[in-house]
Length: 448
Picture (cartoon, rainbow, N blue to C red):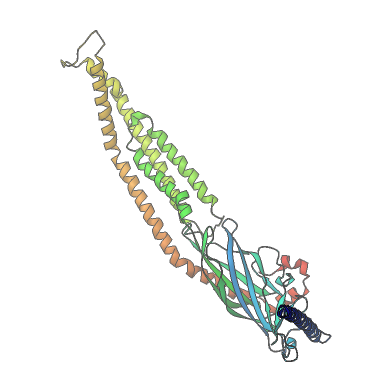
C-alpha cells in the first residue's frame, strides 16, 4: 500500500513539472518574439524604403507561379479564369537577426509592416488592384529573406486562335509587373512554375512556361499556360451530326421522284445544316482576324445541300416535262397502254375496264422502270456529292495540320513585334504618368 502511494505521488510531481516547463517555455518564446519584433520594427525601420544597400543595385525578387486549377476558358469573350498563387522571395538586410540572441528562425509579419513590391497582373480584365492590397501575412526568416504568397482567382485576357477548333491548343499568358518601380529599382528573377491540377472539364494543361521581358523600362514576368481542348464533346455535338447529315445528301438522290419526298428531304437536310452552322458560330468568338476551319467545313456542306436541292429540282422537272410531252403520267400511261394492248393476258370485262391484276402489274412495272431510270439519271449527282464530301474532309484535315505548324510562328512574330513597339515609347513619360496618377484612376489611363 505505501508503495502505491509513492508511485502516485511521483506521477503527480512529474506531471506538474512537465506542465510548468511547457508554460515557461511558451512564455519565454512569446517574450523573445515580442523583443525581436521591437528590435526589428522599431523607429529605425521604414517600410517605404527599398531594401537595398546601394541605390545603384535593384532589389532582386524571385518569382514562382503555381497554377492550382483552371476554372474556365471563356471562348466567346476570350478570357482565361484560373486559381493560383505567386511565390515572391527577396532579402531585406535590415530585417536580419542573430539566432543566438533571438533563438527564433522565422516569424509571421502583417503585410503593412514591411516593404513589398507593388505587383499587379498586367493583362487582368478586372480592375487592376495591386496584389499587395490582399491581406496576406509574410514569412520573415532570420537571414532577412522574405516569402510572400499572394494568390486567388484571376481572370486574364487570352487571345484565342480558333482556326483548329475543336482540335486546338491555346496559350494563355499571365503577365506580372510592378506598377511604379522600374527595372533599375526592382528586378525579377524567375525560379520556375508548378502545376497542381492538369485536368479540367474542357481543358488539359500541357505545360506552364515563364520568361522575363522589359516593357517601358519596367521589368515583367510572363507565365504562359499552354492548354489543349478536350474535343470528344464537340465531336458528338458538332462534327458527327455534320458528317451524318452530309452523307444523307448523297442518299437523297436515290429516292424516286414519284414518292414526293425527294424535294422535302433535300430541304430538311439543308435546314439541318443551317442549324448546325448556328451551333458552331455560337461556340466561337467574334474574331475577324482568323476563320475557323470547322465553319468553312459546315459552310461547304451547306453549299452541297443547296446543290442537292438543285439536283432534286432538276430531276423532278425532267420527269415532269417528259411525261407532259407524252400526254400522260407514268401510271396512266401504263393503263392507257393496257387499253390498246392486244395481249391475251389482258381480259376486257367491259369497255374502258381492265382486270385489277393487269393494272397492278402494269403499275408496278412502270414504277420500277421509272425508279431505275431515276437512279441511272442521278448517278452523276450522287458521284459529285460523294466526291465533294471526301475532298472537303481532306481539305479540312490538311488545313488543321498546316495551321498547327504556322500558328506558333505567327504567335511568336506577333509577340516580338509588340515588344519592339513598346520599346519605341518614351519610358520616362510612362513612369511619370504612373507616379502622378491617383490609384483609383489608374485603370482608365494605363498605357497598353
